[in-house]
Length: 404
Image (cartoon, rainbow, N blue to C red; front, side, top):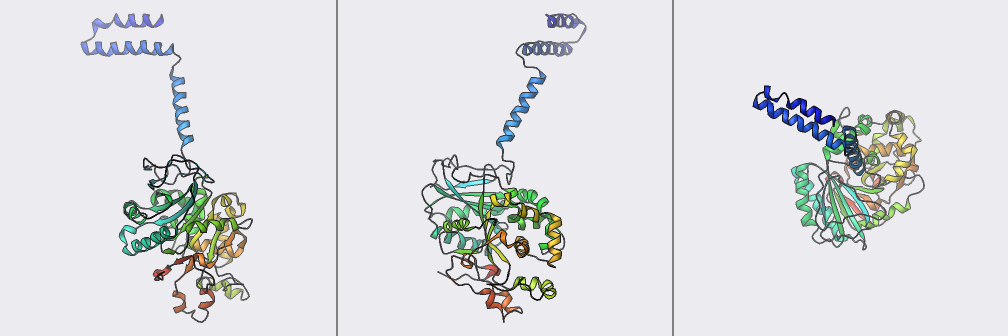
């Protein structure tokens, strides 16, 4: 055998070396033997490299390419092992707490909601609003057997720790199965920023496109961020109070007309009458900024139904996300906003109302009256009026929410 001749040649020179060199040469000889031995088993450098690459490819295939955060998922022993139904669960995308009421049955129908939960640890006001929102959601929440409510929170680390503690208390009386998923705001912003950077200068309060502002455009590009297995999600503000079963809100998805990608309520103040002032001056007969029922008052993003599947498949909607088209519409409408996603939806809704399903005002009964006291008192009620039942109160601009 060729390797024995090699070993013999090496051993013949051993006497001329020192003891430590002897050890090194013995190791080299053993390595030669090992190489030839493993070669007989067809394990050479090329095949080993191929096997490593195959293992990595298999690992990457099982990962979610659209995961929202670092993989810090925490699971309880009684967490459902598989989330079925119309939508699959989000895999490995954040810290997860699971209701003790959720068993290990497969085939759950999931109802996904998402809320921003940043800097809550530093604000007693936000904590109080969150308490009102969650207690009212639990009070009125009812789901069928085999259904689970999945609550997504976009959060910083300190707020996440606070949120976990609060939710354990606030959901004690929940009669339905639920999961809680925390998404890291920094990791999420990193994914979001390249998509929405160009539109920030048109719809942000600051001058220019600030990195941190990107999170306020999450709903605009959520269909690019969330995994494709998640096809519907409801985004909610924290300053809400629920007066009906949150499950009923999801039934509004079934009312979307063909072509609609987002369900949203109209803005209930004359804010866009004010924002579009230059365009309205140039086109005095326009419906832009006019009150309902015949006008286009714009949208409020406190409650939004996002049909992620429809958003992904809509060529029109995705074309409107392109920087050149954003700039074109902003120039056409002389538009400069400061409310993030709400401004973007309002602007494209002026041009393409068919992309939106108009939710009844009772699903987002906004209570703010700021514009009534700032120059629009004579026409304020035309925007603010909301006939019909109230399902969700929205205490925007820190307005107190009525007691039940």
